[in-house]
Length: 146
Image (tube, rainbow, N blue to C red):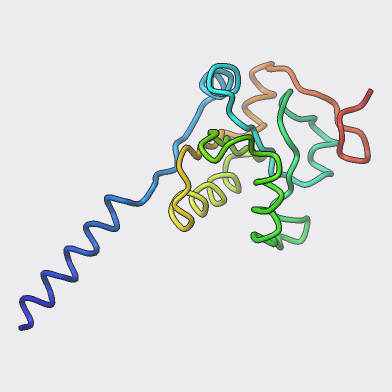
């Protein structure tokens, strides 16, 4: 009986591992391709202060995940994400300063919520800006400046 229980347990763990979604890392070039060829939704999860300081990737959506104190409201964030996502299968590319926060949020979406087509800019805005890629200026109200 113990062997049968062990086999069932191992089988369910193996199945879970197979069915879990994976977060995919992107570099700057791959992000551009995803944005323009796959109509990916680029979501900048940094704080408004960070958007003001460095600008944002053109065409991205600013949707803060962790506030300046490191707190988050995942349920509200997911509701806001669904409002800007065009279709349930639209790829999502998350962006933060260095890739750390976007990696954590991406893992949460892919593994905990089993969302498909979740990516993140693995080196973040630092590499985007450092490579000379374009940025849009963001005004104090967190919208692109006119």
